[in-house]
Amino acid sequence: MRYLIKFLIAALITAGLVGFAQPASAQLGGLKKKVKDKVEKKADDKIDQKLDQAVDKAAGDGEKSTEENKDAKTEDAQKPVAGTKGGTATAEDMNLYTKYDFIPGDKVIFYDDLASEELGEFPSRWNLDQGVFEIVKQHGQNWIMCTDKGAIMPKIPVGPLPPKYTVEMDFYIKGGEARPHWYTIAWTDKDGEELGYINCTYGKNARLRIGSKDISSKDLLSPLSEGKHTMRIMATKTTIKCYIDNERVANVPAVEGFAPYGLKVEMDLWEGEPENPMLMGAFRYAEGGKTLKQQLDETGKIITHGILFDSGSDKIKGESYKTLADIGGLLTENPALRLSIEGHTDSDGADDANLKLSQNRSASVRTYLIDNYKIDAGRLETKGFGESKPIDVNTSAEGKANNRRVELVKL
Image (cartoon, rainbow, N blue to C red):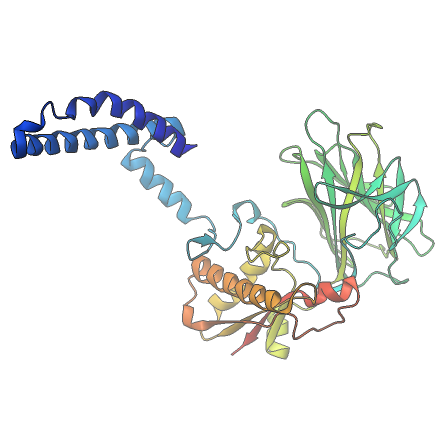
């Protein structure tokens, strides 16, 4: 658009400024040519000046005062920035995640991105509690669609949930005039009865309920926009934190006698509008583990699934903020610590592409740590191994999720 504006303005200004610069007669020879050159130079300068002013005005890029620029630079210096690699950003803007402390569990127990499911069928890795569910493809990916109020349960091992675990679930908001539905992740006992839940209601409120008591009910900072959103739980035997996207919506420091055995997803239809279906996406349930420092002290390396990328991309996602902040803190507190940042993928895709992707991802992490935590570049090396060093099988969704990781090895 900027170039189109500049072209149109150039044509108008050129017609008014350059037209008079054409020579009246070729008989004036060299003198006339010199005069012409000078006039055209002035005209060109005038054109450039007019173009810059007009384009800046059209694009809304008017110059700030010196003081405004100074203030903006000072404010920006206090915010986390995305690293750059060859002029390309290596990370999303992290400013919205500075109060986001979610770190996904490091051992995946159940993972379903629905990619291999057959359209029109019931999701094969789930059990039906009630309602009508089927796999559909919308917005470029597969979803579980619920056509009335219902609930499904992931096929996870029977038994108490781990002492430390995380749950993540994607869902879709239509936006516009459509009224958002209710999406819920519930905890169940060994008989499948509900013990509590966290839900997102109407795309603008989150409520946590344990037993018969509402522990918290919080309005989101702003209603959810159209698109994919994520509900998250980070829990131990005695604590629960819940999130909608980057916003923490519940923080319970002490829970007594809460011992869930299973998980359930519930969806409640606001209106039966065909153009506003209830859509649930990827679901990840993982066991938590040792802190980054504990891993480094005990094994000499950190295995993390908390540095996230979109499929096929080496641009770090904003949800990685807390994990990267912890790594940056470790490096800052231990000036002698040197790390090899090593990227790993699952076996999907071509070997050479996976190798290149893992190398680029490790380079993105290195750039981010250098730019945001002022770590000396000599303390960080990078390697990419692609799919060549799996830590789990590549024959299940859970195994592949475990294999997609970043390792930081002490040098």
